[in-house]
Amino acid sequence: MNVTVKQITAFLSVAQCGSFTAAATRLHLTQSAVSVLVSELEGQFGLRLFHRTTRLVQLTDAGREFYPVAEKVLADLTNALASSKELVAKQRGRVTVAATPLMASIWLPKIIGEYAAMYPGIKVILQDTLASLIQPKVRDAEVDFGIGTFERSGRELVAEPFMADTLVLACPAGHPLAGKASVAWQDLAGHPFISLTPDNSVGQLIKKCRIDAGLELQDAYEVAYLSTVVGMVDAGLGVAVLPSYASPMTRVYKIEVKKMVKPAIRREISFITRQGRTLSPAAESFKTFIRACAKGKN
Image (cartoon, rainbow, N blue to C red; front, side, top):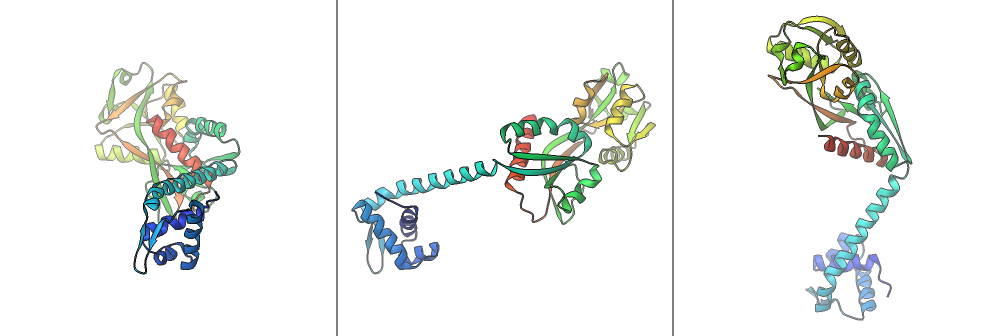
């Protein structure tokens, strides 16, 4: 027996449409071509699969029995081909990602390592860059996608949230606030505060929270990078507010991390891609992998 996919597809189309003409239109074939395919299939079985009249086409008993089998065969074959294409797509490729220095140093390396172990043929290129440069890099196609917190993405870009982040307090071990289970924004008053420059997205968010709460803080230092903030907190120069994903960095220092409340600030970390651009199989695969890792983390 030599049954072909074309024959099974023609059989299913005629059965679903109830007409050779309609089936031919669906398959972009001539009516005679569809009729030949069905006749060839019937010849393989030595059975009639359809009752044909000038007005009506109906399945015979044999046709009704074969229909679910044919449907399953075609579905299984389609799924197998899709899986094979996906496997081939992940055999080789290249993906370039832009992220802030902190995320690039703390969170992404482990994910890249796990992904590389699964798909050694795909090269992941990580560009650690200022948050303000991520969107231009995506827009200019220098990278496949960016990762970060984006207040506005503009018409040319699409932001796709995939992970939640909160703001936390970092204070030196032994500090008066270190003994609290959680810290309200008003609790920061009177303590030397290490702030971030306005061009830092976290710094912008902290500034907004301070204004909304009408909070007067004792600004001791203002720096550009979160890594510098952590070092200064460790040196006992003040307290600071950090994104929660930065918490692992504090573990090698004498720093306590506490939940911030009243209000608790939640941020969305997103993929950002260029509007209308289709990602390569490698880039789409890595993006999906990051999402799965973030889901497991949360």
